[in-house]
Length: 186
Ligand code: FES
Ligand code: FES
Image (cartoon, rainbow, N blue to C red; front, side, top):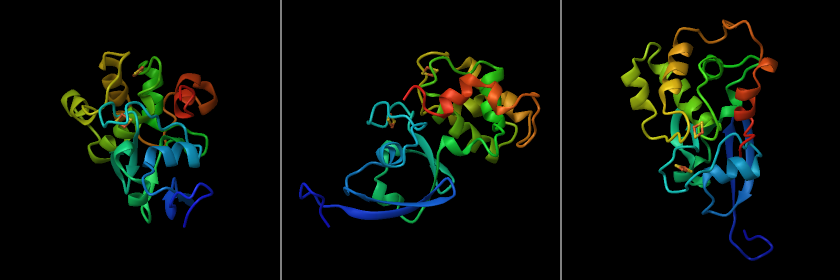
């Protein structure tokens, strides 16, 4: 198939945050652009496009990947999870709470991807050491925090189980994290 400019396109279908989505795309389209521009999920950020910064991390079939290194076509038939899926039924994921409680973000540009990697880490290692956390996020850059508070944020989340409103706050009381989750710095 071709679009109005004569460029070849293809149909792709995948599951994103639990819902089936499809689109007509150029075969060269990167997953980060499909997620952001076709689906409007701008919580996934686009930083370098060269696999350096890690701001574009999403889950592909339950594994964190840099979505600027994945062709949208490669994600066809697979499951993608973005930062917008962390909050469930108005309740923040403990990782999101942890970033708020421990001031794990400043500009917020790296934050959605940091949280996606952190959630994956905690799902596989519920009690990670500082070294474990630093190793997990080693492919991702933060220009603001010096990483110290990010490590603290993940440790905070490790001590607060998924689904518990341990901080006594709800989603509407967390502007920093909600802005980051919604891609306010996109
Ligand atoms: S935009 Fe993907 S690693 Fe920087
Ligand atoms: S909070 Fe600004 S880049 Fe990490």
